[in-house]
Structure formats: C-alpha cells, structure tokens
Length: 178
Image (cartoon, rainbow, N blue to C red):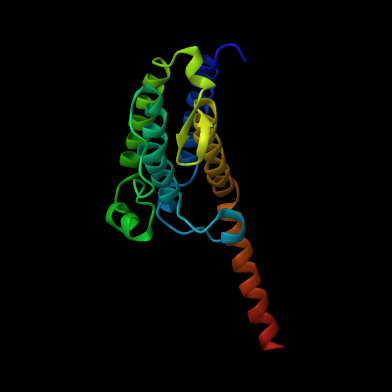
C-alpha cells in the first residue's frame, strides 16, 4: 500500500456514508424500537447502534489516532458504553444521532491529513496492545462495517420478521383450538 491516508480516507468516507444510509433505510418509526428477531438483528435498537458506533469513535478511535500526534492514550473507561449511559441519551432524535456521527466522522477525516507516511506502520502502545496506526484505523472501519451490516439486516428483514412472528402466533393459536 503506497498511500495509507488516501486509502483510509476513501474507506472511512464510504463506510460512514453507508452506515448512515443503512440507518436511513429503516422506517423512522422503528429507530428506537428493539428488533423483532434478536438472533438475526441483534439486541439493540437502530438508534442505539448509531449512538454506540459514534461514541466508540469519539471516545476511543479518535483519541487513539491522536496518539501518533503526541496525544495521550485514552483510558479503558473513556467509553461509557452501558445501558445506563444509553438511557441518558436515548431520546435523541434520529437527526441528532446522524449529525453527531457525521461531526465525529469529520474530525477523523481531518486527522487523516495530519499523518506522515511513517505514522501508519510505527507501532504504539494502544488500548489493544502494541499496534500500528493502520491497525487502529482498520479497527474503526471494521466496527462500522459490523454494525452497518446489522442495520442493513434490520432494513431488509424487520417487517418480514414481524410478519413471520404474527403468522407463527396465529398458527399456535389455531393449534391450541384443535
């Protein structure tokens, strides 16, 4: 790879846009509801997934990237990823969640321009052990794709799962009458 910054700029832009696009494909009336098929769509609402990814990037990914620019390593408790913290922000609108995600995303994109070629391959002590910057940014990319996949599953199958559950309930009710 000859230009890490350029490659990551493209990947982070595309994955960020894709992540929010996936969220926007879900009926807004479902954004704060738990999915009907947790074994396939996970245990969190679409809104919580957006918040989770945003806070990961704000609290861990950005500070970890800044370590190569003389920033300090974030502490392990820097990311308040808990049910209690989610309860304090769960009333945020979908637009607020999206705007916050893009604000954090923009900070990452601006940081990419500050790294010299050597930064990408020099290991540094991180929350994940001794890792190069390329690994840290790849982790951000992977995390977005992982939860973007969940949002896409929700957008494609939520209504189908609700119908399947309703049909199963009707069948069970009919079976009880027999």
